[in-house]
Image 1 (cartoon, rainbow, N blue to C red):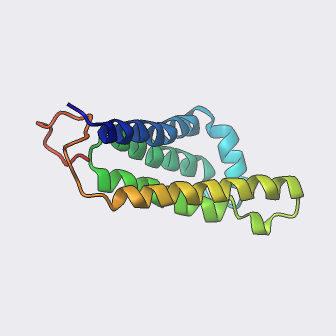
Image 2: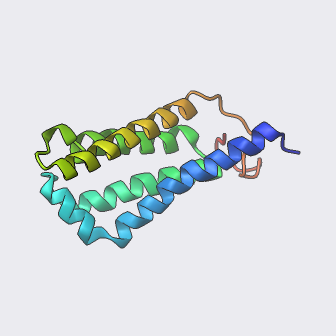
Length: 141
């Protein structure tokens, strides 16, 4: 039986991981638009970069939802957030006030998400609140 804390933790994992799964899917669904923006920010091979980052966050988010390979899943998300925040949302380089404001919001949101990922990385691995069957042959939260 799950405790209230377990239920809150699972709900948080579903929301947090789901955010990255949906955004990873968006990278594949809207590759051209995102690649155009990536190119405008000086990203080499922007189409490949969009696919690669979509895979990073999609796989990472799915791992968080399922509670499998937590260190790897959260590390994938963290690598994405570090790279995209400082390269794609470098608001301090923008001259258009609307673009600068949008990028500042996205930069700060990404730092908050990175903080959450790092906090989750600090938790001990536990089977207690996992959605994955305990018989699975890999580490779970």
